[in-house]
Image (cartoon, rainbow over all chains, first blue to last red; front, top):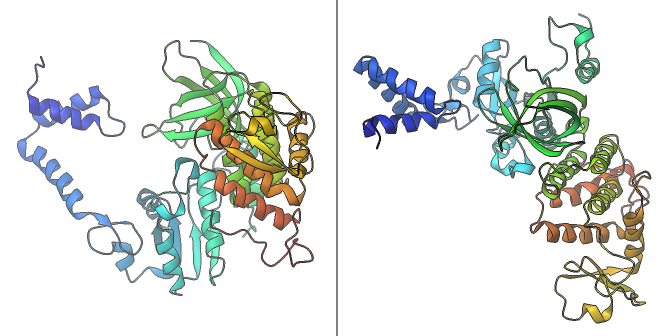
Length: 200
Length: 279
């Protein structure tokens, strides 16, 4: 027979379902919520409810949004001729934190992974083609992950968009700033050589 | 826990937690293994870019005595599959080889010759080989190594001579060609032309040291169809990559000029040779 109240056990069970949270961590979180002030604990519950009820995908770019369109799509300062394609909203956030890109985004909500049964029809590729077909976009930047599946997805999209008058680029790849050539993997060095650029 | 080293091909990578993944590898010395790669998704991971699909890497892992996953401690990238950013057909054929390795082999059952075959075939696919013969060669050789090679010289049921007909019956359940007497009452029969059968025999007999034999245009579709049916029968289901491979092999063959398109003097550089994005 359990020595904990049913509601505490339920909360521990729910925490343990979260990624990266084991049973022990779930118990710690539960005890923490029982220790803090009631208003703080309820603020967390309120935040979770609020996110689940109000946040959905932007109808244009599929970023997370609280209205029909996200803040980036609604921002008139953003360059409508540049479109950056990412796999997930968290990739968009990482690029935004870099603070360099001033164009708009399109979130695919995944990548093509035929071995796992994920095809193009399960992503937002159809909506991307519709956006490009409208004619305002001049450059598409492929920012899918630099993995075999990410590259395959980018290649699939670039084949699909080849008939439209857009320039398709992809993020540069190669050696990390601050690393030492001698210790760099030969495959990464090969990438860096292939994507070498003019010395400005 | 014993530390082991081997060469391995990455078959599958699944996110496990914020920073770790579970990786399925086909290793040369230990066969198919599942390992936990702790910290693989961190920016300064000890595995660099080695844990990506189709990559060949040199691994060090700790074997768990219990049923749990082995622990990957090191992975050094030996060769990456570069066609992913150049040619979808090659990528899909690479995926297909991974699917076959995943589905046809058992955990911890080493087949160094199958590893060498897969390594060689993936390198050939990546480096521009004609896809249809290399994929068919891999399929035949893999089936032979694993004891599933079809019998094509005589009747797979009675060992008798095959009839002197234009089309011969291939029994999927029997695992080979059938004489007319044994064909009676058999289910899951494929009719194969004598011309295609001659070519398939060459593929079935070619040793691993030699590359794939020639695959004439006229029997490409028939050969692919027979092999796809036979593999689907062996696995009990149709592999996910079958439809992709059939399309990819044909399109790449057209683009490289290995197959002539009717009505065109040469398929090489032809206006319609660009691979479609539709898998």
